[in-house]
Length: 127
Image (cartoon, rainbow, N blue to C red):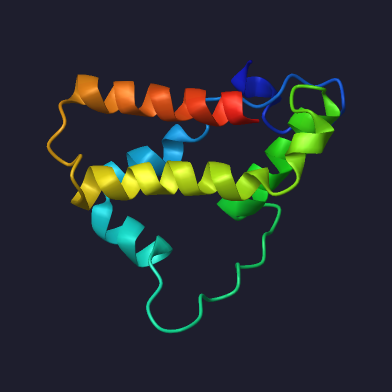
């Protein structure tokens, strides 16, 4: 999969790279305070997703579109597509939280990369 096709939404497009989930993990590790602020919810209700724009689409909407594109391209079976963004989002953000303030915060860079590879592999196989 190639990065240059990340915005091509045609059914024959090469799906976005599997490395895309690394972005929130890298953000969480380099800016844990901002990550916590952006993705932690306090109070009874989570705020609604911000409206996406052409210049600043919301990451969850990008993930949803990516999974739709993968389904159109035949990489994700249609019968397994419904709701899969929740599982993928949860895995990536869960790993991010574990790395910045949980039991995985002391992992070496090599161990972090292994955890990331295993998480992405589990997501891919689950789809």
